[in-house]
Image (cartoon, rainbow, N blue to C red; front, top):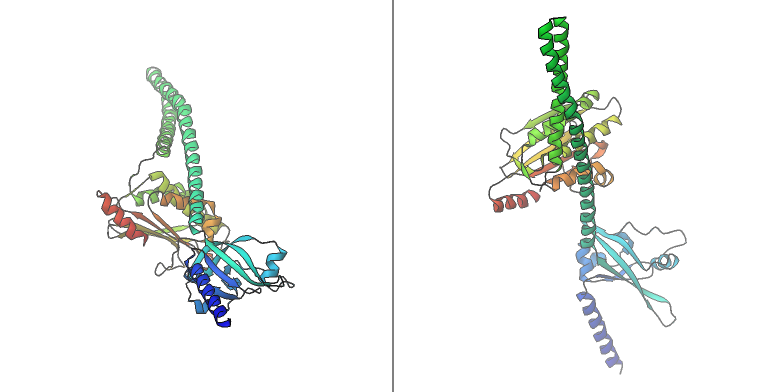
Length: 384
């Protein structure tokens, strides 16, 4: 009888383990204090650890952020009861492995209705998180596009309001010039005034032309070949006064031949402007003793893509561990929009926030190619 009961218990145990191993969620069986007694293979995969290195560890060691126990709370069970926790979002983390999960808790009770074990089921929600992040990025981009369109409408309104007065002034000047030729009175003074008026009109006309081009670019949806060096030069020219005012020196190092890249010229120029302004804002809060030298490298990567590196003079471009995610990007709206502008053109945006608040950025743009398949392969290679 005892042997039969033992075999039944063993069979039930094996069946239970088989079921747990085939679940798609990570399963942890814990003691009331949180010590791990069992973890299925999904849990091992999410943590990147063998089972032997997970057992007897406290689950709190793998949670980010961890539970913050108060002095009178010594176990998971007390924490769960006191705060009525049925489900919570955390990140399962160990080393380079980090997976967002939703954890739910169940309890195994004994005959005295006391909890012997806690069953923690962790569901991988990284896909959902990625979708939420993508939605947030799309919302940022849509907001940015709306702002561009508003600026475009403003530019068109300025063009309409200035074009007619300028035309009237130009006609008036021509009439006065003809009258002056007949009378000859105070000719030198009038001619000097006319010259100044003409120069002013030409400057106003140039402003209108630039605004008109800007308005057209805000409505441009189709990607076109863009010269990155030219876009960078336009961004620097746009901020020339502020760069001079803050004593910022910009050094550009470029390869001789740089391929064109597909993109919206205004978006790319605006992304460069936002990065430059990011440095300006940092330096303006850094004090007068701050070294204000910015190095920008433009590198032709085997005609496959163009790589731009923005870094301060105290940093070395070699072996900079650029990463795609950073706290600065999450907290700075301008950087987030700049990243969207780059990625919307098929580019790659990486940021490094090292110690001593020295920031560096690496931007990659795929080279324009007549063969769509080859361009796609280049983009895949670029993202590695």
